[in-house]
Image 1 (tube, helix red, strand yellow):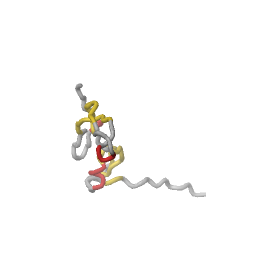
Image 2 (tube, one colour):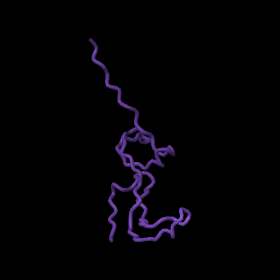
Image 3 (cartoon, one colour):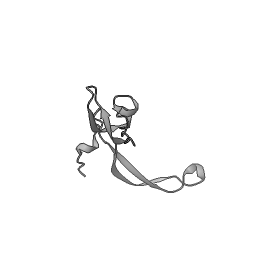
Image 4 (cartoon, helix red, strand yellow):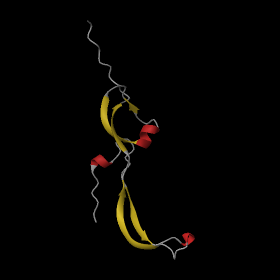
Length: 92
C-alpha cells in the first residue's frame, strides 16, 4: 500500500506530518480474566493523523493569513490567533 502525503496534511509552522503504524486485531479472553489468552488475528497498516486546525494567524509583520497549524504549535505559542473583528454598529 502506497501512502500519498497531501500538502494539507502537514503543519505549516513546524512541518509535522502523519505518522505511520499498525492496527492490530485481537480475539479471545485475557488470561487474567480466566481465558487462554488473546490471539492476534490480523495486522493492517494505518496512519496517525496530525491534529490540524485551519485558522487565521497574525504574522509578526502584522498581516493576517489563514494557515493549517497543529495543536502543539498553537498551544506552544508559536503562532498567534487573530482577534475577532468587531463590526461597527450603525448610529441611529
